[in-house]
Image (cartoon, rainbow, N blue to C red):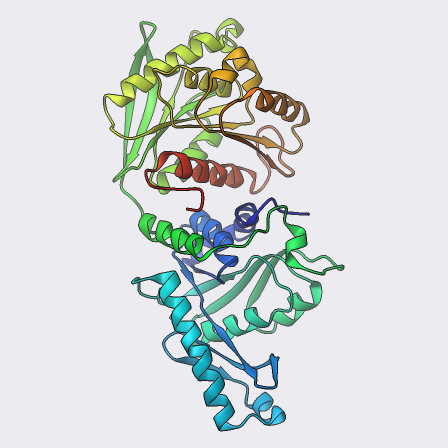
Amino acid sequence: MLFTDRADAGRRLAAALRHLGRERPVVLGLPRGGVPVAFEVAMALGAPLDVIVVRKLGVPYHRELGFGAIGEDDVKVISEEIVRRAGVTERDLASVERAEQEELLRRTRTFRADRPRVPLEGRTVILVDDGIATGATAEAACAVVRAHGAARVVLAVPVAPPGAVDQLRTRADDVVCLHRPPLFSAVGEWYRDFSQTPDGEVVALLARAAHRDTAPRRVRTTETEVMADGLALAGTLAVPDDSDAVVVFAHGSGSSRHSPRNRAVAAGLNRAGFGTLLLDLLVPAEETDHAYVFDIETLARRLTHATLWLRERVDVPVGYFGASTGAAAALRAAADPEADVGAVVSRGGRPDLAGPCLTQVRAPTLLVVGGHDEQVLALNRRAQAALRCENRLEVVPGATHLFEERGALDAVAGLARDWFTRHLVPGTTEDG
């Protein structure tokens, strides 16, 4: 087993495709299972997301043998050689095409509703699926995308057998595959959760991507001060247009609102439509004093004051993102009913330092820890056992405490975005 689920696979695939962001690509998911993977890629690259609905045209007496494929807008790709060798008549061709065209139209209406197809002419197109077994559908998709005028076709999948990858390199300009196991029987064996993707989830993910769109949001950024304990705490408030929610960042020991890691996560949340408040819970004179750095009660109290201050300025749900000792402060503050926090995310945090307050947290809580951060991982597991709210522990493979490894911080940002979207955005369910 390699991937937790399709979203996890998508985040990891996105890290491997990061270099394509500058090409302004279009991301196309093969429905149904490829769309949750493609959604993560599109969000990470800031690219438009669409489905690629194709239907293979199979020889009537040997359906597995494809003699062509059809796509939207009457795109048709035919292998004259296979037609000739298989003895496919004009009548056979018309009959098969008619049946597949009806199914193609049905799926297109179901998935895309009234949205127009994203134009592909002259664009770099990233075709995404949740894995490849034989590669027949992926081959058809490559052909249809080229017929739609794509300038470059990149096929991206989390897992596939080596033979299929080699074959598909002759159909796509590039193939990105994270894992090519020599012993391969089925795509699902490489996922912990490979449950079926319902049509409704595909529709919801496409709608979310279209709602958030790829046009840069205007973000209003203000340097501000929050009064707490009679002190002026420095903060940076960034609120995109039509923001769905605001996330308050509680920094850990030895860090501040200028932390490049938290700023990177905050930027990702801003792109997804979330406001962020990066706040120093300590004033400069306190930052070097361990008595203050590990005073979780004080940090939590100031975080609660900041939340109340924020509610006077924005009328949207509020979440917390905590790192290191800041995670303990976030959880302790979330246990205070006065804070009314909708969700909490901890990055490499010390939730154990929240102590008995863990049992009083009601906000859905996500704990994110690096796979190589073994001591902190053990502390998070212990803290998770004490939580009584909805919670999840996500381990980022290969990451250390500061998530400095390539793609590790992108994974954190994706996990945080999805958790806050699910729990803070009105009308959003687990399936999208």
